[in-house]
Amino acid sequence: MKIPGHQLTRQRIPATPGVTGPARVDRRTSHLLARLRPGDIAIIDHQDMDRATAQTLVDAGVAAVLNAAPMISGRYPNLGPDVLIQAGVPVFDTFGGDVISRIKDGTRLRVLDGEVFDGADSIAVGRVVDGEVVRGELESARTGLHSQLESFTHNSTEFLRREQDLLLHGRGVPRTATELAGRPVVVVVCGHDWEAELAGIKPFIREQHPVLIGVDDAADALLAAGYTPHIVVANVADDEPPSVEVLTRAKDVIVLVERGAPSAVTERFERIGVRPLRFETGATTEDAALILADAGPASLIIGVGMHATLDEFLDRRRTGLASTYLTRLKVGPRLVDAAAVPRLYDGQVRPRHLLAVTVAGLLALAAAIGVTPVGQEWAEAATPVVVDALATLLDRAQGLF
Image 1 (tube, rainbow, N blue to C red):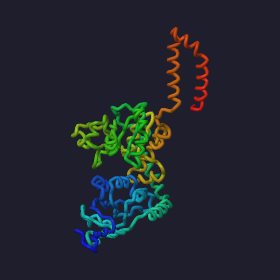
Image 2: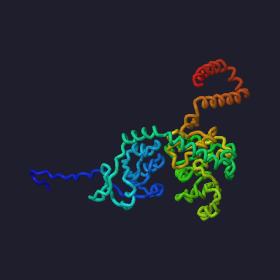
Image 3: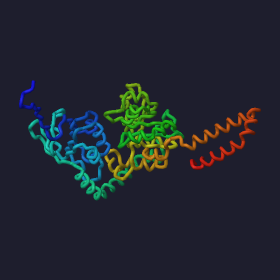
Image 4: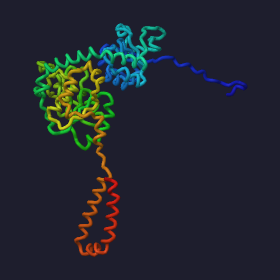
């Protein structure tokens, strides 16, 4: 029913300013990452966030990240904050350690300009971390690298002393049922851009049939991408090991344990029907997989999700910088970054290949016909025409080679 002289309008409710979502709280970032869902507000205590952790937060679709600790402490130029900023995730830090205990998991929060609200109550205030802040602090961190490099040199010396039998002589590397000798090996880690790198080497995998090694959660990622890893490398101390499906389907399961660890540490694998091979080393799982492939010896090792710039090495401080550096030195001649493979190998059939097959087929057909009486008559009549045609064909072919 229309009301004369009046126009009915729908009143629009203004949107609540800031970022809203349920809080997900945990002091251990690795535990929190496994629980995140799109739209969550991640509340962590993670000083100097690395790029791998930041990428996992981005992939989880978090609405915002609240860090009790500084995102960049200034000790070294860590790459995590920039990943979050580039992905458009609001970032706030320096709330203080008590924010973890004051905010209950699952609470509906609103964050506006670094201030955290539970309903109408302001419960915490932090710093807004934007692109300008990240660029300035990273530049300051790069000027203070001297002490970090000194520490890195010391740690590398200590790691080499502990692992010299493994790194220098190959002692302690488990012997796999999967044959590695003389075969290409692809080691997959869920690092930065790993999905794009894996897609880029798809022709290589399809045509060369390399051994696939999945490291930690990358084993499940490989399975989800349509590949079954031949070898799974995991750490026995991880709270979230690869899934039962991928462990039971892999031909070899390698678990990293501390030196002298009792046999009971692998019981949880044996309970699901998997008899893992123990690898006693202080190296990271990623580096252990590279050492395993190198000891094979593999003809070529392609690393997916791995990077080796100075900033990226320093960004791996929490997960074994010395291990990574020394392992790269050991496997250097065989290791190729997956990002470079599409430039060196694309697996495509080129025009000259098709031309060569066509010419070979025509010559074979002509030879077969030429041995018959009818074919000899045709040959005598068609020789001038064929000669002219072949000359023209060869002239055109020169432009393809």
